[in-house]
Image (cartoon, rainbow, N blue to C red; front, side, top):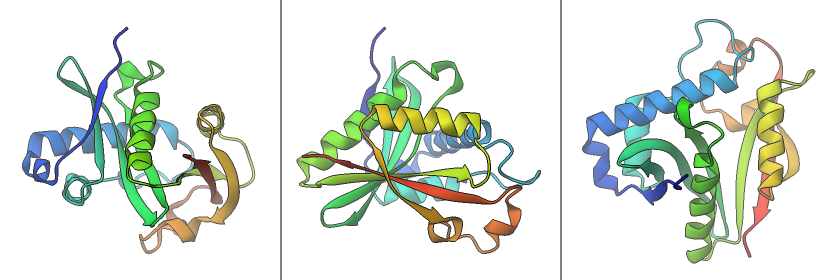
Length: 182
C-alpha cells in the first residue's frame, strides 16, 4: 500500500474554504471517536473551520494526501527555540490504522529536525480515574513512536476555553509526551 504524501500547507491555503472545511470535519470526526465518554452530551466540536483556517494561516497545518485525496493532518506549533508541539494528528476513518498518522508524525519530526528543533511534545487528554480504551491505544502508539510521558498536567493548563472543565463528563488530565529529535 502506498504511503500518503505529507506537506506543510502554505498560509495562503487558508483561503481554500473547501479544504479548510474538510480538515475541520476530519479533526472533529477523529476527536469524537477518540474522546467518547470524556465530554458531556452536546459538547462543541473540537475545532471549527475558522480555527482551522487560523492554523493554516499561522503556517502550522500539515496535510496528508493519497491519490489526491486528503486522508490526514496534524498541527505544529513552536513551544520555544528548541521544542515544538504536535497536535491534531488524525486520519479519515477509512484510513485509520493504515499508517497515515505515522507518516504525519514522521514528516513533522523531520521538518522540525531540519529547522534545528531538538524535541517534539504532544499531549493526550485522559480520564483521571479510569482507563479509556481509545486513549490507551493512542498512548501505546505514541510510545511505540518513541514518545515518553514526561509529566501529567491539569486539564486547565492546556485549554484556553473558559468553562471547558465544567463540560467534562469525568475528571481529566493531560499526559505530556516528549521525544528528543537528535
